[in-house]
Image 1: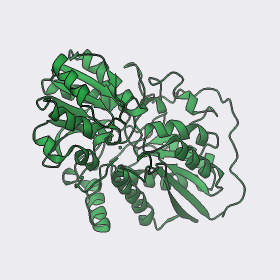
Image 2: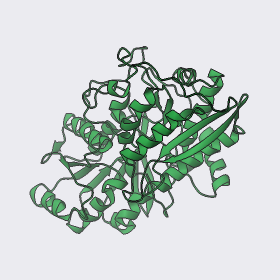
Image 3: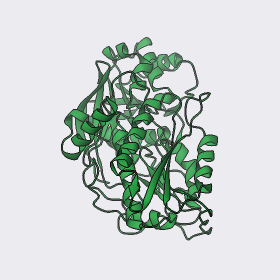
Length: 443
């Protein structure tokens, strides 16, 4: 999910509930085109091919009593507020365990896959982080990345050493199952084995939920934009497919923007003059133009057209980029996995209370996923009970009915995906995100 925030961002998750806000999960997390027929496999079968490369052994050396857990997230740029919250959640999990698992001491390394020049993740930085972890004999778990495009870069590298990956935010469908780009997910698994998991639901749930919500609020015509990145374009494709099935008219052709442009006023003027849609769906993030699109919709007279965005926009950075006053004119909805903290109960509420006490602020939307990822890393190490990458990865993939965290009871399926499948929708108002409704969708 990405957030630069002077504005308070109150979202967390509970149980199998995922909050849908202006269709986002901020952060580039989607897959490319997927067929509606693609489903999560839970029968023990996976899309894993026959092994084509041997698994690289862990480098020799290191401390036999130390296990290092690295995270790779965009710690520079407009996603920093969101990733600060994720890192806070990770640290909470380790601190509550006393930074120990059995006889092992846990050491945590916070890696940045973004640059100041780009303001977002780069392939070069994510590659460097993955290689650094691979070459570190103490590194046994890699929490991240935040963006699905970044995952596509690091997954093949880390798969060669079967180094466990636990993503708190990547939602691209093709990372774990068929339905994305050609060759997915096999091309991320050169050894023919799995090592990637995620604690957040994939976009084959979020995309359809966004379309179902649009239908529920009376949208009949919609214009679809995307940022031409793995997460955004994949979500837009999914949204379009379901929107058409539900009888909504997609006007114009799905269009990819160049998010490095200074503004999109010419595009918005053309959309208004040629189509006048009831809504615009943008598959993208705060970092790839969502705020500017909102601003330019109002500037070009599209203030009565509803904007729907995914969880990549579920952060204060999106509201800040557009300007809070824009949303006094423009209706904007976002999709996300989780509930506002004030609506959580049980262990979810306990997490929020501890987070507020520790960090003196409400958690960002993905903080709870950082916490859950940290707990899963601890659980996998505990079950493996040895400093061995393959054993820890196998132990993680075997986790079922996990209920020690803040998300309720859930399991990893045969593809490394969470079985949680409920989302919610949020509305941007009064400079923040307000809960609208829950959606539950079968995989």
